[in-house]
Length: 219
Image (cartoon, rainbow, N blue to C red):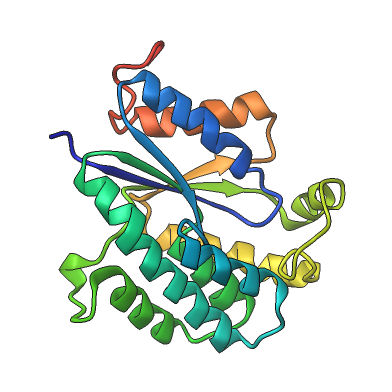
């Protein structure tokens, strides 16, 4: 069986990552892969209910973190791990890097505690580092926070996170940059300030470089 592939999309709100997931899914299907599209928080009935709480209910940073990892654990058990075991490609809009960026850098939550919860949620009740589920590739859509805020203002009514001030998103952006520096082999930086076609080309090149689009037209 072909090995499963886990690709995550990351970036601050307004970076445009979500609009490119379907295009990558189409390209991967063209290469003969079975693709699962999902998101965090969310991806299962339970996690989607927790998502609504996270996006719309007031709570402190610890509550946010615990809900995020509870949703993630259910998502892994119910969707991500089974799909990967069947050799499918999982494309996920956000994963644990978002928690480190938003709750860690943005809210100032303790990184050591986040790291332990990451290990616990992504390896199981007897956490072992070698068993921790980690993305094979993280596509980081990097956009200056001021530009992202301008896009959001033109797009939709903001949720509880999107309502945060610019300084919060500047901290989140630094959090993403820090995560990318810690895992340079896993991260592929996408310059999200470029035009849509250029952004898509960067994304496809990053996936093609890892051999996952070998059967696609033009791949």
